View 1: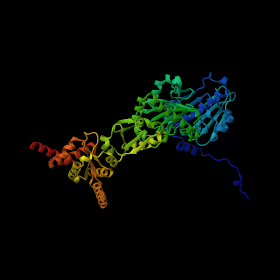
View 2 (view 1 turned 180 degrees about the horizontal axis):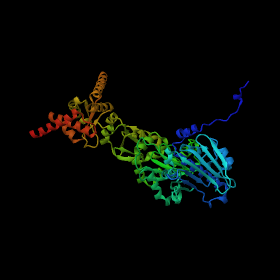
View 3 (view 1 turned 60 degrees about the vertical axis):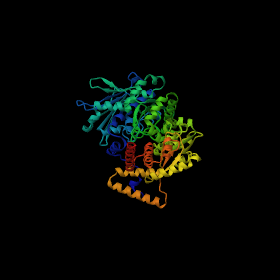
View 4 (view 1 turned 90 degrees about the vertical axis):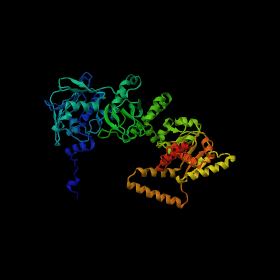
Length: 615
């Protein structure tokens, strides 16, 4: 047999205190949203009335408004009136007393996208600032009704006599002492301007002297065509206020699929790495999110946008957007507008594009290195350092189809002096540059890339003529003996330009050893000991395999100094000069000098001075 309790159908009992706590702590960002919800309800009521033609004869000469009367020390009551469609007794009983019901959902069978409020919780937000809410409303041709709701969870509905009240709705409340500031004129004006300045419905705020101030202004960011051109200066002022500096440019954005229009402002500065995008989104002129992170593609870090939409959907809190297909389509279309701007600037205003790339080059490179979408249209305008000077990738690819590059800056500096100008090598040592160069074959048809290896470069240099082989071998042996203590071997080649006497070529193992030595000189005792043990372990392993890494000093046989030095019988002059050439080659490669090299430089210069004095 079923129990009586189990067989009965009962309505849920809603704890209003719990609902208000849920709203304030988990749905809304704070109690200040009460004003946004009230304005939004008034806007929806006016939109319904305007579109349905209800109560035309009882309108305010077609000027349907929202009027706000802030509280003050003399009058602690806050009031907001609208000239909307109004409610009758049945509407009030069904809608204002049921949590979750919306007066806008199917009222008059209106399309839902015309209305912002769809969740029936807007009025309850007032309980975050007051303990009692009074709603007086009248629908055209019917008697007015008065609804009084209490934070304790009770309400009453009264049908009022007479029809002298205008069609529309008036909401009154007395804020709690802690929330009185939120209902005062200064804060009300600030919040109303923030949320509703672009609404197509007049918003009037009582000035306390019997007059009103209007906060509305045209959404210049959503203008198109000639109107947009005419208001260009105002648009740039808006961008300046939004990002704190005059934008580099203002780009028209549009997504016909969702009725989204707006503007993207190009940042004139490099945003901090930790900065997150903050785009302002309005729905039908009402602010929904002023720090949206999902409106533009991730790669559009260089832009801040302001848009107004009729097709995007707000979440229940109406403070962010639902991540649905509509948002995805909008993001794609807005991203296409940004790509079109880059291409347009490249074709018609290369100076502005160059400035844009110079400001955001590191961020752009970080995305181009791994983002196929961005790489496909932006890579050509990025610049890289080459042995023939800095040039754009488009210039580089048009100059040669086979691109050579180094992985590190040290390697680039070692070979920069001998690379022919007509076949430059790219410095891949800067952040992301090597990754970008490796992607070029996938972005430019017929392009190939090759990493330059120092060993192969040495092999590619010309060996002196066979007739010179004997003096060349003698020079290599004498010079290698001089530099043996520095783990440097000497090799002779012929290369251009002839004024370069020698090149210092060191592979990664040698360079890492030099870096460890430099680190030991500036580190504390604990870290110094760790590095010293690591260095000894490395040396022991290398010696075990008889493969101690050495640097190579490549002497240029076409250089007059090398030829003269090879013929010198004076060992003292030969030794000092070779040591100086060794240090000079290291400095030319921008490599750090250790204590031994610095001491060697000083001693060699002193000896040469003494030799000159003696002679």
